[in-house]
Length: 308
Image (cartoon, rainbow, N blue to C red; front, top):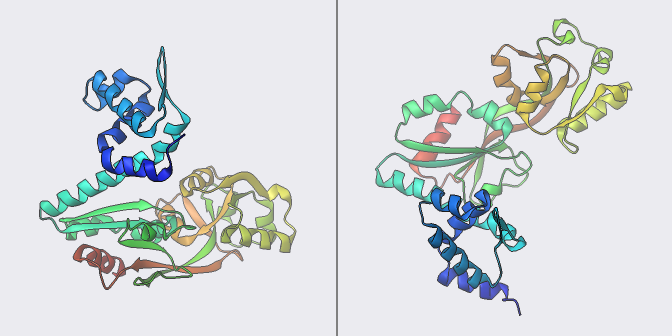
C-alpha cells in the first residue's frame, strides 16, 4: 500500500536532506549520473546512493535507467518544482544572511509589475545604489494580474503595482504615478508622420492584440466596435510580454495599446512615439504597497527614494 501524505511528510522532515533536493534537480536536468556528479562535485557512487535513499523514503522509483543515462519518472516530475522552490529559498536565505553578517545596509525584496518597472523604477536604480551602497536590492517582475503573490508567501518587502482592490491587513498603498492607456507605434509607421489622426486612420492600421480580459483589450474592442473597424485591423499575434510588443512595433507595421508607464522607457530611445487619440484612457495609479509600520531601514530607504 502506498504511503500516505502525512507519512511522506514525516519522512521528509526527519530524514530528507537539502543534498537530496540538489541531486534530484541536477540529475533531472542533465540526465546522467556521471555529469550530475561532476556538476555537484560528488562521486558517481555517492550520487547513486542519495537517489536510492530518496527512493526508499518515497517507496517509488525516481528515475528510469537506460543505456544513455536516466530519465525522471512521473513521481520525480511532481517533486521537481518543490525541490527547486526549496533550493531557491535556500539561495535567497544565504544571500540575505550573508548581507547581514557583512554588516551592510540591509536587504530589500521588491516585486514589480511591468508597468511599475517602466513607470516607477527604471532610471532610479543607479541613483539608489549610489546613495545607499550598502543596501542589497533584490527585484523581480510579477504579473499585473497577481501583484500580491509575494505578500501571501512572505517573499517580498515592497510590491510596486497598480492600486489593488483590496489592501492586505497591515500594509498601506502609496500612490506614486498616474497612468493611462495610450496608442503607440514605431517611428517608421505611416501614422507617425501625421499630426492629426482620425478614427478612420486608426481603423486602417494593424493593431497588436492584448490578452483577452485585459483593460487594453476591452478598450480596443470598444472603439473598434464603435467605429466598425474591420477584422483585418487585428494582428493575430496576441501579446503578453512588453519586450515582444516593443519588438513588433519597431518594424513600423503595427500599433499597440499599452500603459504609458510601460512605454516611457521606449520613448527615451527615440524609436517609438505616442499617438494622441481617443484610445487615451485613465488607469489606476501606480504605487508602493508596503508594511510601513514594520518596515526595516532598507525598505524605508527604497520607498523614500521612489517618492522622490
